[in-house]
Image (cartoon, rainbow, N blue to C red; front, side, top):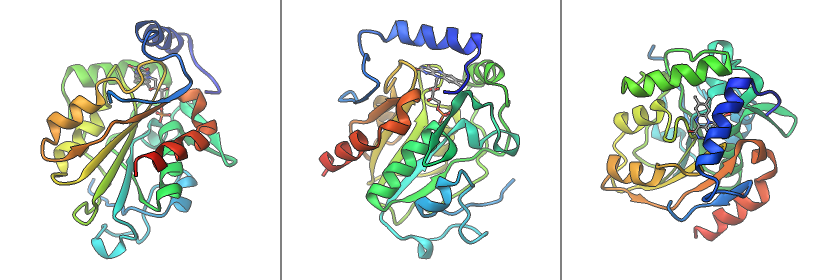
Length: 241
Ligand SMILES: Cc1cc2nc3c(=O)[nH]c(=O)nc-3n(C[C@H](O)[C@H](O)[C@H](O)COP(=O)(O)O)c2cc1C
């Protein structure tokens, strides 16, 4: 993180204290575990922090280049003009990207999986402190934000779902993703970035929301460590078989 405000720091401290026993490493694997459309794309285009939109049209199976989908949500691609405060951005290969986007890019490059940015119709607040409050209320309201981007998931066998922990669970946009798509029969792999909550409740949530999918143990990396997580993350991917 390049900048973190007082409120965000307080939030982070709270998260860190609450999870201190369970997460002391900078990165770790875990055994607990509008209507415009956007297609999944190769790692190179999304690595630029651009929205995935290989064809400018809706996604379809013919654009699929892999049976692996790497779907990710990151704050930095969901603010107006994709410029959410730099508090939650990392420099990866010379580019400013959201933390979850860095992890998704590493996974896509390693597996050959298609990258897909989960974007909401609405814009999230640009200011980190405002975002923290906004997301808390959104969660309290049980809102399922409408998704702007879409992908045809039918041909994918494995879906990595990559996101930041928000208020000890998944961002509401990830709940929307599970609400929108039937992922039965697929292998689902949660990957989180966080400031102390590690995987939070990811594996349990995945299992309850997609009971007919195979949910694998996930992987989590602290926000400040995503850019240096490449080697360890790639090793973990190899171990998944
Ligand atoms: C709204 C909000 C809520 C957050 N809640 C948590 C939390 O409960 N536990 C935690 O460890 N980190 C929490 N964080 C920190 C983020 O998970 C962390 O900074 C992450 O690396 C951000 O990823 P991104 O750049 O892809 O958005 C929160 C951040 C935000 C903006």
